[in-house]
Length: 422
Image (cartoon, rainbow, N blue to C red; front, side):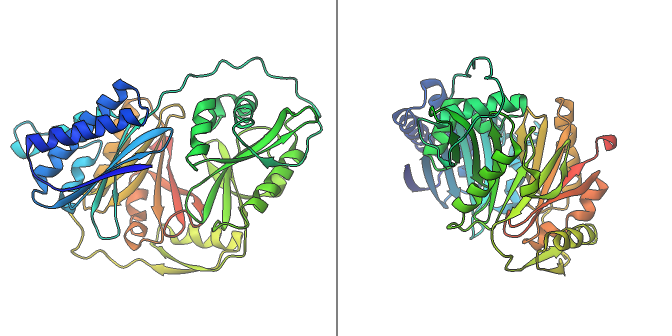
C-alpha cells in the first residue's frame, strides 16, 4: 500500500512544511507510533529542503510505502550525480563552506530515522529512501524443549498460526546466530504479510512445530535460505526441508539459493560449498540449469571468478571491463548496510568516483572506531564500472571471498577485509 504526491521542487518553507505534515499524517494513519511518525516527517522535510535547494525547479515524486514492519518514504528527483556524494555517511561538513552547510540537513535526517539510503533509477534519477521501523517487543522465550527424535509430517507452508512457533524454534536452536527476521514473532509475521519472508514448517502428530525453513529474495534469481532448523538438530529432517524449499521455488524466477550455515544439523549433503565469510561457511544449490551470462572482470577478480564458475558449473563469458577514461566523477557514493549485532558493515558502490579508495578507507576507519570489525564490499559483475574496482579494493585491504550467482544485474562478488590490515 502506498500514497504518492507529485510536485515541482521549490525551496519554499510552506511547501516543505506541507511535505512534513503529509508524511507524518500518513505514517500515523498507517499505524506508526507518534514518535516514529514525527521523526520520519521531520527527516523527510530535512532531505526535501536539501534536494529542493540543489535541484530547484525539477519535478519530484514523494511516495509513502507501508511495508508492515516499516514505513518507507521514497523521494524521486533529478538530483545531479555530482551532488550525490553528500549522502555518504562519512561525508565531512566544512562549517566555513556555506554550500556544505546546506548538507547539515542530511546529517540530521540520518540521525532521525532508522535508515537513509540512495538508489538510482533506470533513467539516472535519484531515489532517496527514508525508513522508520515499527517497534516490536522482544520475546522472553520459555526454556528450550528437549531435543531428540520427533516424528514430523510433510513440510507445509507456514501461516499466521505456525510462523510464531517457527520463530521461537529458530531462537531456541540458533541463539545469537538467529536471523534478524526471527528475532521477534511480530516482526516475522509482518515480514510474511508484506511478502518479504516465506517459510515451510513441519509438525508432529500433536500439531506442534518441530522444524522449518524460511527464505527471502536476494534478487529475482537468487534466494537466501534461512535455516533449516529442527527440534533435534536432525540433518536428515533438515535435508527434506531443503528439498521441499527447492520444489516450492520451481514455479518462480529463482535459479539458485544460497545459505549461511548457522548451527548444528545443517544439511551439507544437500548443498554445494560456496566459500566462507568470517567464521561461517556459505552453501549453494542450483534450482535449474544455468543459462549462461556475461561477467565483467578486472585483473583482481578474473582468477577468482574463473575458478568459482568452473567449480559451480556456471557458463560465463569473462570480459575485461573497459577503462573509465575521463568519465569518472570526482566524488563516489557508497551505501553502508550496518548490522551492529553482528559487528558487520557491508559496503555497496552506487556512484563511481576518483576518490573511491579514500572513501572506502574512510568508511572502514569510521566504523572500526565504533567497534565494528567485519567489513564486506559487494561488486556487481553485470556492471562494467563495478568490475573495475577490484584493484582498488585490493589496495584498501579487501580480498575476494564468495560469489553470489545472479544476486544483482549479474553475479555479485563479496570481498572481505582482512582484520590484520586494520
